[in-house]
Structures are given as structure tokens and as C-alpha cells.
Amino acid sequence: MKYDFLIIGAGLYGSAIARCLKDYGKSVLVVEKRKTVAGNIYTERVCGINVHKYGAHIFHTNDEEVWSFVNRFATFNRFTNSPIAVYKDEVYSLPFNMYTFNRIWGVITPKEAYERIEAEKKKAGIKNPTNLEEQAISLVGEEIYEKLIKGYTHKQWGRPCKELPAFIIKRLPVRFSYDNNYFNAVFQGIPMGGYTDMINRMLSGVEVITDCDFLENRNELSKKASHIIYTGPIDKYYDYCFGELEYRSIRFETQILDTDNYQGNAVVNYTDEDVPYTRIIEHKWFEDTYEHISNPHKTIISKEYSVETKVGEEPYYPVNDEKNSLLYDKYKKLADSEDNVSFGGRLGEYKYYDMDVTVSKAIKASYEWR
Image (cartoon, rainbow, N blue to C red; front, side, top):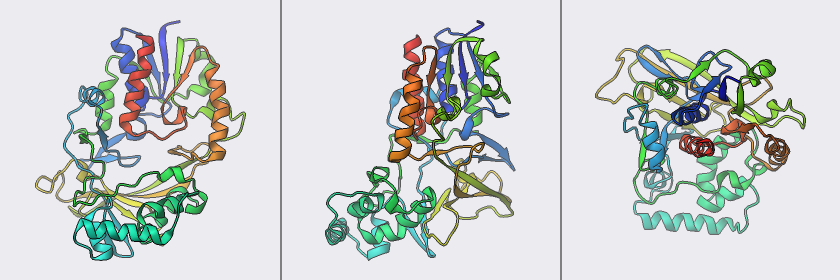
């Protein structure tokens, strides 16, 4: 065997754990089925603008170890995620804050806003939420739910909110201040030059094979290393022997427009069900400022449509309802019985992770083989 580790997938998890293992002096081969590295955080330069090809990714964390790690491979700007929501031509601030409450109810002080939300919650009278709709109303009341949560969530998951489990929306960012920072993390930003450059630096000195499907070449590739770290869909690894896990995916409509500024913000959510897309991303505002515009004559936008994933399509969001969780448990039992195969990342563990959690899990997983 030529390598200590064979890592399947050159996304953020696979690349981070490859870097850690390489730093420990291990020999590593990374195999990626796409023609490019970086997985769903892949960015490409178009018209002088770094386009987030598979959707917007904003790095945010309170973990100093994670922040120190990613800063080895990129210089981050201080991008602050301040999305806005549009509902029937009305514009609201996200996260829910004093701007939002003033727009909906006309309140001005935090005391007024708090009392209004408490009155809405009392009116709803929900003690033990059993689904997402009841959970959301129990947190912010019916009016905010109807305007800013219901339609967007239905489009995002392709299911009525009454059919979604309550835990999906355990907490909502509700702030009785005028702070528009959605994540409110100590460290936050976008790597200047894009995520692809960051991943390429992360994989520096690591042997990488792209445009190669591991599962189609499993017998040959498995002989190359003593241990495999698999970051693809766990159900696909086991040839769907228990059935297919469900995912939601995103379809993108990307346009190059002859204007310097289309919507004045990086992210605009559309919460009305009559609008078929969930949000519009204007890519330049992740790295540009309004004082420095990379291309004053062009901008690039992407409309995002949430769709059910079919076999062969790129999965994005695990549907962690009871049915799928029980199915995943069956696959996890198989995975736990493996001697020389480990599973990681959002597909390998069938769980949506923020990027900082993904990096943290990769770092910690690598400790076993130091």
C-alpha cells in the first residue's frame, strides 16, 4: 500500500483532514469525483467577480483553533452577513431585530417590541410545540411567522411547516437591538480571492486526483491505502442497501447583468410563497465594498430554487426528520463496524454542518492518527 490514508472528497472536510494528516507526516491521497476541488464552497472568477457557484458561504466561528487554522490558507475580509427579507414588496431586516419589529408593528423601543412578541405568544397559547409551525409561533408569534418564516421554510424544505419537525427551528435569532449581524460570531468573513484558492493552499503538497469516482473504481483505489476516509453520501457507499436517504438540493439561475449594483446587498431572501425562488445572491458584495467595486459595469446574481434531490444529483441538505434519522441509524451501524473506513462531513454523517463545525470535526478526527 502506497499511502497511509485515502480521502474521498476534496470538499472542506476532506481537504481539512488531509492537511492535518499531512502535517502529521502521513502520506495522503485525495480522490475527488468532480473536476475541481473545494466541493460546494467552490468559487470561480467571472468578470472579475468571485462567484459562489454552489451557493453563498460565509465563514463564521467563535472557535479560535478553527479560525487560526483557516487563516493559514487565506486572508479573510470582515464581511458581515446582514441579509434582508422581501415579503410582498415589503422589506424587512434579518435577523429579527428592532428594524423588523418597527416595520411590522411600528414599535420603537425594545420594551414595546418585547411586550408585543409576548402578547403574540400568549395569544397563540402553544405550550408543547409538535411541529415547526408551532415551534416558530411559540418563539415569535403568528405575524412574523406568516410573513417571514412560513413561505420561505415551505419552499426550502418542499413540505408544509406542519409536516416538519420542531427541532429544525429550535432557536430563532431575535434581538431587541438594531444589530443586523446575522451570525454575531467573534470571527467572520470571506477569504479574499475565493474559497477555491483557500482549498488549493490547504491541499498544497497533498496528492489529489480529480474527475475520478471512487465508487466506480473502489476495488483498485481501496488497495492504495491502509485507511479510507469517506466524505460522500453514506447510503451510496453501501449501494442504498436500506433505501435512499432524502436530501434537498438547490437549482441555480445565474445571470451576468449590465449594471454595477442589482440589489444593494449580498443576500436577499424572498419569503412569499408566490415567489418561486428562496433568495437572490449578488456575488460581488461578498468581497467588494461600495467604495471599491471590482467591476463597475457588471454584476452577477444567482436565484436559488430549493428542490428535492434525485439519485445522481448533488445533495445539499439532509432531511433530518424521524424517518430519515431512523434510516441513517441503520447505515451508521454498518459504518461503525468498519475497521479501515471512517465517514465524515455532511454527507458521510448525514447532518448539515456550518463550515466552522466541519473544520473543527476534521481537526479533532485527525487527532486519532497523530
